[in-house]
Every structure is written in C-alpha cells, then in structure tokens.
Amino acid sequence: MKQRMLSSVLMSFILSLLMTCWITLLNIGLVEQFASRWLQAFSLAWPAAALISFIFAPGVQKVTSKILSLSQGLLANQGK
Image 1 (cartoon, rainbow, N blue to C red):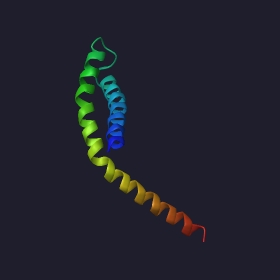
Image 2 (image 1 turned 135 degrees about the vertical axis):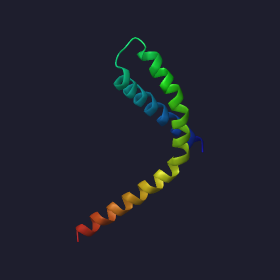
Image 3 (image 1 turned 60 degrees about the vertical axis):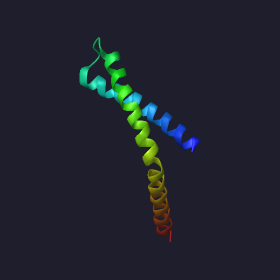
Image 4 (image 1 turned 30 degrees about the vertical axis):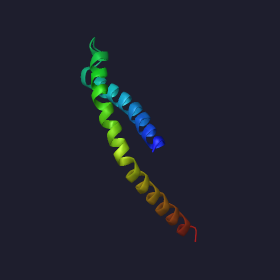
C-alpha cells in the first residue's frame, strides 16, 4: 500500500507539473504572470491527479497485463 501511494504521488506530481506548464504556456504564452498562473494551475491539478492515479492504478495495471498476455499469445501463434 505504501509503494502504491508513493508511486501515485510521484507520478501525479511529475505529470501535473509538466502538463500544467505546457497548457499554461499554450494558453497565455511566456508573459509576466506565467509562473504564478502555472503554479496556481499546478496546485489545483496535483491533488486531483494524485487521487485519480491512486484510484485507477490497480485497474490500469490489470488491463495492461491482459493486453500484454494477449499480444504475447498472438505473437506465439504467428510463429507456428
């Protein structure tokens, strides 16, 4: 549980930081208020992203495993 929580916090931090920077840059450009607007967007996005990541990570991992199992099965059948 600790690893899952820390992983969610770290991944959401990095993604929120980079995505809010990118979207803020696209929306307003490099203006004087860029840093404050970016940090405001980030402070709103990170908690939401962390919660979403924590809730959906187990399901995403299951779907990923199924996709990889199916793709390995298909590749094995092509070799026959």
